[in-house]
Length: 414
Image (cartoon, rainbow, N blue to C red; front, side, top):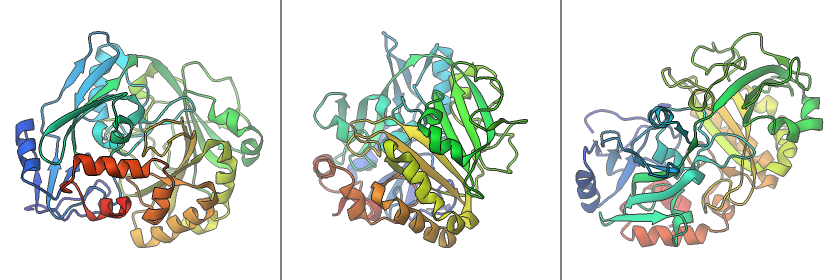
C-alpha cells in the first residue's frame, strides 16, 4: 500500500498489498471474483487482526449510501458501508429508530453486526438481532441474499467476515423515542451485593463504570424513558456535573446528562457523533458471562483489581439479552458484558487480559470477537454449541478461502 493503514486505536498496522475503495457494487464484485486473500475494513474499530490480510483490503465507505425504508415502516435497508451516526440521522428524520446503539455512533453497521457488537439493556438484544435480511457477495463474486427464517440465516448474521462481503442489511426499526440520561457517582459495593439485578434493570440501558481503585463503582449511567427518583440511588449521589465514562477525563464529548429529554440517538451512545470517540489512545477487551452469575463475575475481577489497575482506564459493566445467532456472544444466554478500556500498551496489557480471563474461566466467558483476548481458539470454539455448523456454512459460501486470514483460520480451526 502506498500509505500505512492502521486500525482506529493504532495498535494494528495492516499488512495488505493495497487498500481498495470501490465506488460501485460491480467494482466490488470484480475484486472478489479476482480471488483472495481479501478482507473488509469497516470503521477500523477492532483491536485484533480479524480484519488484517496479506492480500487486498477493501473499504466500503465510498459505496453509495442506501437508506430505504419499507412501505410498512417496520424495516430499513442500508448499504454495507454506512455508520450508525449517519443512519440515525436519516431514521430520526423519518420518525423511526433502531432498538439500540453501541457506545460509539462512529462504527459501521455491517462491522458491528458481524461481530455481535451491542449496546446495553436487560431487554435489548445486541445490534445483530435487528437484522432481518443480509446481502452478501460470496467467495466466487456472486451475490446471495438470506432472510430471517432461511436456512443458515442465524449463522450468517454474526459472520466474522467469513462468508462474504456484506453489501446491504435489512434492519428492524421502531418508532422514534426519547430518553433521559442520568449519572450517579460512587455506587457502593454493598449495593451491588444486595440489589444488582434491580440496578441493572433500572433503565432502558444501564452502564456501571469503575477503574477498580476501590471495590465501589465510580459512575452509574441510566438511560430511561421516565425520570429517575429524586435524591441518592442505592447510596450513589447524583453527579454534580457532566461526566465522561473514564474517571478524570473531561466530559465534553459525552452525550447530554442530568435527565434532559432527547432523541434516542443522542442518548443511547455514550459519545457524541461530532466528537472523537472515547479517549482515542486505548486498547479494549470484553467478555460476556451469564447474567445470572453477574455478581460472581464482578467478584472475580475484584480479586485481580490490583494487578489490572495500573493498565486500566475503565471497566464498564452492562447487560445484553439472549438471542439465537450462532456466533453471538449472547447465544441462548442473557449476559453481563465486562468491557475493559486499557492503556495503549499491548505488552503491558496482555498479562492483565490473561489475569481477567483466568478469573472468569469458571463462568465460560465469551470474548468479543473484535477486541483483545488471549484465550486459545479451541477454548473459544467450545463456548459455541453451533460452531461446527458455522464452519460448514463458511465453507459453503467461500470454498476457496477468499476471505480467510491467519486470525480467521485460527478461530475456525482450519
